[in-house]
Length: 194
Image (cartoon, rainbow, N blue to C red):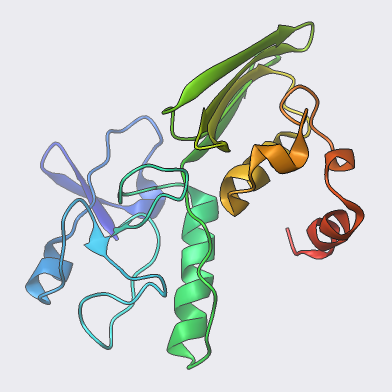
């Protein structure tokens, strides 16, 4: 995929993070694929053409955190979409992954992690480890912002990805840990590839 910036085209490996990027979807449009803010795909990453799959930053996909179909241009989603598309192209059935926005950064000892959407009831927790803002809708975690200690944030991410009702893991937002899951669920979580 190439990107356009100020009427110049750059190959992906030459683009610096500071540039405002725009997906180049012209080839997809010329091929007759359905395109909105990205190439539209189904749950197996199949496009509107029966022989063309798409994955990564060029696609528009369902946001399981409760957001609309949109372009979710982050590496973990691109990896999972590519795996799903490759498996489907090989003729196998692959369960689609759950895609949602996820970003993190660290600077001068301060860490920030965001995930999902920011709709629903905000629950704010401030303590010595930092600031956490969780967004809960329909009894499920839909998104979060964590500033400070991000340890065990993967548990919050898993709650969004799996759509686990918070009633099944009472207290987990205050102190993330596998102890909030029953024994069988803990085994399943620990046995999954991460």
